[in-house]
Length: 441
Image 1 (cartoon, rainbow, N blue to C red):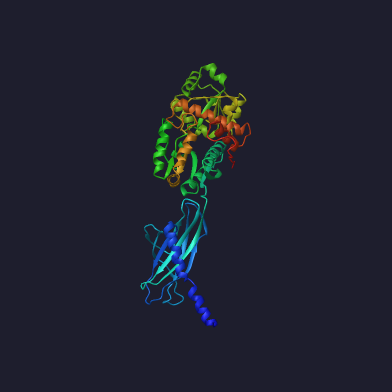
Image 2 (image 1 turned 60 degrees about the horizontal axis):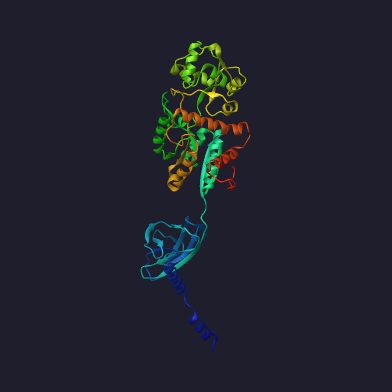
């Protein structure tokens, strides 16, 4: 047998490539695998267009995620330098109804389970000529859901950032914590979508980004409700509040309170009046002039402090002045660690003068729509604090302040790190199990 004859016999025994592709397509159709792309291109002659390039953005993809497929088609009837990106095609999984789409790039959505999947391209011309190609996709284990949590640059914010981070990690999220931000920067990043979740203060958001004037007499519940409602228009969803009201307050040693039978700011105002303002009081300079500080407080409660009895100093000097018994009353912030350290009494704002600053988690709507379980997870955290996220009362707010005074004291005084304080709190309240592998920031 001649070499030519032998070669012809061998070629008869070969199965054409397009028959192999047709066989593979049939198997894929029976098994329900793959993604089918049909591209229709006009042709002036009976010459099928050719798939010059069929590219995937990557060869593997986590279950449930997307990649891009890009196809370049060359029509042999056109000059060599004219290449067609297909612009009209039908897209869908084999065995399912196909959907028409426009554009040179196809978004491929991987199935929910790991395994092997396929994308197949079929190019047709008017005369019935076809060319097929396919790509195999390795579908890997699903990736953890990534969430970005942000917090401000002081102790209480470090702790709440770690609380949210560690709890979300325990519930299956991968969490990136962006810490140590100034208040305006945190807000800007939330609005820009660079951060997904944070916890901010109702009074801060009401008066700064939302630019409202605070009117004395608005209680914690009202400010929270107004902020929550208005923020929905900004696609920022406020969850349930932690009633800790980290606002201006006045405090004294327990002996002074017991001696004069004091509990509320109304009681203290009565004492100022009885003594004609002769009670040594330590404040910082901003508090002495702000409308939501001493001038407004005196008008609201009907008393005046004799100027010779007012002491002033740099920030936190009032805390040192009270600690050293150089005054009887001092300006503090509601959750200052020094309150817990010394056991000071904080006067109840019974006529709601000071703006409420209640710590509340909020989430970008886009993120919450994608992961609605976040609301339940973070509301479960809120439920461990006084009031459980329900309506506030002055007593609930006072209890919430005490809890946060103690948490802040663990960092400021006991020298624990914020992630250690958060982990201890989550374990003590049954939100995570000890040894669950929580990681710090």
